[in-house]
Image (cartoon, rainbow, N blue to C red; front, side, top):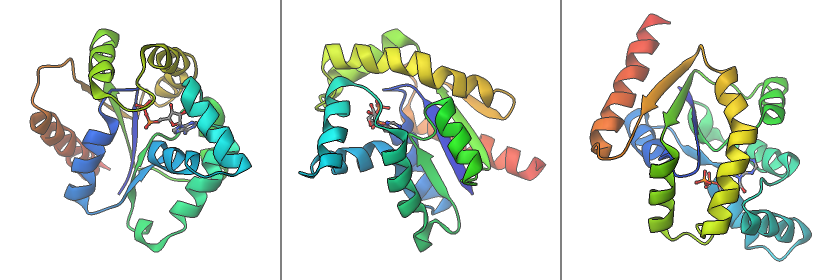
Length: 184
Ligand code: ADP
């Protein structure tokens, strides 16, 4: 069970990833957390990553890929994973295909920009400052929207406008994955 989570900043990718890891008993492979960890290191790579995070820019694909490959080589991913935060650009889709990082399901969390801004401004993570948020949304539209379009025919699209219960949305995602699994 290899699941890819797509969605903009503040779309709830990691929130729902956690429900999926529990339901299917597979690890949460979360590139955002990996990059925040790397940014703590006082090394050339660490500093480079930190500078990208501070600007709301993407980290170099090579750095993300190296970290990701290492993570995916661990035994606990043998039965699958919830891949959260990758691929984020068409360049990464290409790398993913070439390196045979596989997937069985792609979930796309479709959330209105107004709701995204509301959520991110109330979350308070270090890179959730208005200017950085604006840039992350801009980068998302330019780089990640093409990835969503690319997977259009395979996607499980989840609309979360706000106001819905998180548990209800999680239940819906799980149900749709199971339904689709039976049809494959
Ligand atoms: P969000 O999606 O809410 O912005 P994430 O925790 O998924 O937050 O990612 C935080 C940051 O980590 C991104 O803004 C980006 O700088 C970096 N990052 C995470 N995944 C990738 C990736 N696949 N490629 C490049 N940068 C990434």
